[in-house]
Length: 412
Image (cartoon, rainbow, N blue to C red; front, side, top):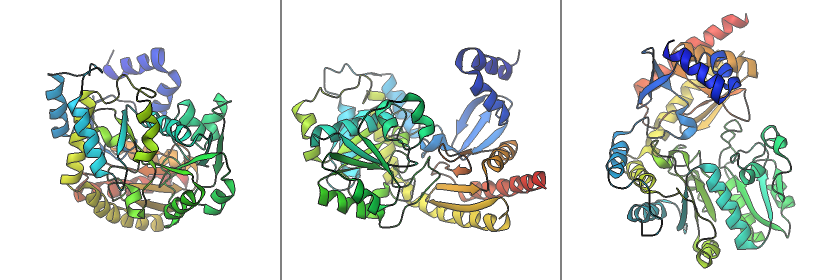
């Protein structure tokens, strides 16, 4: 039995048979074995350009040498922390995070994933304010653990697990009037994404974040910004809030925070908001959060982000890529309804979900990995590593054009 067949059978027998069928249906019937930069190789020797980027986890590319080396060195010294003695790497990592994030954001809690970061942020907001109500947005995505899922504005994922955590309201994204109406005396916080990633790469009005900040200030409500997908240079600035000139009370990070090598999440908050965790420092903890391997990976990732100015790279390449995609949208207007994005977080909205499935299949056949957004299956995301070169960008455009041509022929 060959490696591919054996792996698919193991998925079917011990992981999830429906997942195995879905992968095969999409043409993903090989096994990834090696990756570097934005290239993935499978067990058949085939190469793929990666425009999924680990759903935003690979801003630094696959297997970034400096981050891998830092983690390897620490692995030979002390992989996990005792949790009883001081962890120097964690101290350095959180110091770097404090210095890089905007405004008065200062104290961090390091965890293992984005959904954990959101859970911590929601708990802190309730603890600090003494109130229970959280306002989120329709079509949002904040994770799938119970608190984060309660904030997520997509019933497809939340309804099967009802009743969820009580006290959550959902309002239209980008609508400040709806926010003003929704806030009550029981509102602890508003949580939102600067750009709805899984919602279909939905970009709000230019002044949206600033207006939300103003409303929160006026009403005494905390502003939580989920930068799990938009952070670490993805949208052309280190953090999306910087471009808007806004400092949230709490910010959540994850995905590329671990440099594409370690799973790392974080929430960071202003000192006054953090006060309840200072009074009770063991109230919210994590066995593996902030372990030495994670800390050295995160520390090196922040160093590279700044040193190589990856946010500027994302802005420069993303502007060119978006312009080329807009040309394709005009040429293939029977298939594409809109192209939108910022930096290297770009969505191609197709006329329907079926066309999206056909296009993804054609792209995979031609050696380009892309996938739809979780809440809007008719929107294909283009989310490559920020280290993508212009040559690789040109290859992406060329493959997209031939794939669109093939879909057009299939539909005719």
